[in-house]
Structures are given as C-alpha cells and as structure tokens.
Length: 282
Image (cartoon, rainbow, N blue to C red; front, side):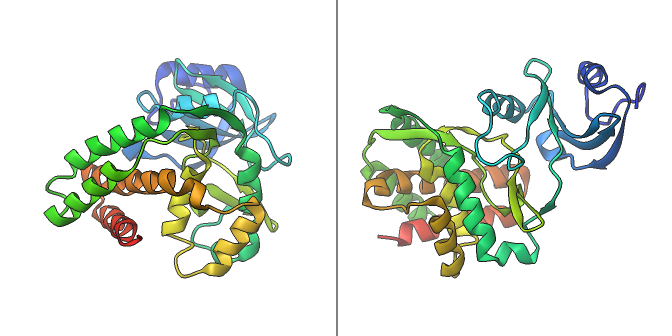
C-alpha cells in the first residue's frame, strides 16, 4: 500500500509503517474513532501483522512499554512486538489468529476461563511494593466523585464518599497488569485462549484485573468464576479487602464519568450498577 495513507494515520506514522513492512495490504480495519486510534490487520510478504497508531492516545505508549520486557507464558499466547515508535505513536505486532471470545459460546465455557486465569497469573510478574499507589488511587477517585456530581443521586454520592474516606491507604504489592482483562480482549483459537490489547497495561495490584470480570461474566456464574480462579491459583481474600474495594470504587465511578463524557449512556448505566453492587457489599 505504498503511496496510500490509511485513514486516521499521520504522514510520519505511514512513513514508518512503509519503512518497517514494505508493501502491505489491509485485511481488516478495527479502528476506534472515539479513542482516535487506528487498528489494522495487514498482510505483507513477510507475514501478517497488527498495526496500532494514534497521534493523541497514551494507550499506544503504554502498550509499547508493556512489551519492553517481553511477554511471559506459552509462545503465541500474547502478541509479539516487531516495531514501535513511542514518539510517533505507532506499533506493529505479529498478528495473532483467532476469534474474539466476547459474544460467542466460548464466553460461557469454563475451560476458557481456566486458561485465561492461568495466562493472567503468568502475566502478573511481581514488581515492587508501593506505599503510594493506594494514596494516589484514592485521590483520583475523589476527583472522579467531584465530576460525578449531577450524574449520581445525592444519597449514592454521599455513600460513595463515605466509603472512600473510610478506606486506609495500605501498602500494596504491584505486578504487571493488563488493565482491561475480559473476553473482549481474549481470542479463542482451536480451544486455546490468547490475550490482546495491552493499551491499558501498568503496574498495579493483581486484583485490578479482576474488577471487570467480577461485575460482568462472574455475576450469576459460579462455574466461570471457579474455573478462572482455579487457573489463576489464588482467590481474593481478607488481605486484599481494602485495595479490592478501592479498585472497585475507582473503576465504577470512572466508568460513569467517562461513559457520560462520550455519550455512551448504556455504559454509564452499567457503571451505576457497578457502584450499587460495591456499596451494597458490606
């Protein structure tokens, strides 16, 4: 595709892509216009690749950083980085074949969750203990609560504020987290799970990656939850109670504020339901 600029990509990004890959053809376009991110599946003489590019999104740089030390686990379970430019906001990985788990029968298959749990355990490599993480998370959640005024009724807002104020800023062990670990970022290929999209990867407590699943696929499905934790090798217990509640408050309120900001009111309502469950859990 020399001479043709994919929609949404800058001249610099296109020049780098042509330098890295040579002539290529676009097989599929999975771009995210709301996040100003171009996502392409391309074919070249050297094979097939996934391309991500954005002039504004910080997620590209996070994904590049996540690949810096290599991906753990069985070969072919995670994308392999081939080219990247943090300055230009573009990366190229080897293409992982498979179908998204979300919206297919695999989303309700315990074996898929057992594998996903095992892959997450491999990904969660210990980094360091932090005495600042919980403080920062509580502060950002306080800011989100202020933005939530007018989006939540006064009673729920007050309860969330009281819950947040009561949580101590405990020290936590940080690991390499995925940041959006759920079936929309899992591929199923011949009965095998693979994981994609590391644009939200960062150093966080391990429970961070369990919040979305606990409010979505695990609701009313003990079989999926049990299979996942069997694969992961541990469950959330009393030692994680404080940071678990803090992560839940942050993600619930963050969902409400972010979804309202982009006009996704169904997603905003799912955030309200998340917050209701958190506040109802003693």
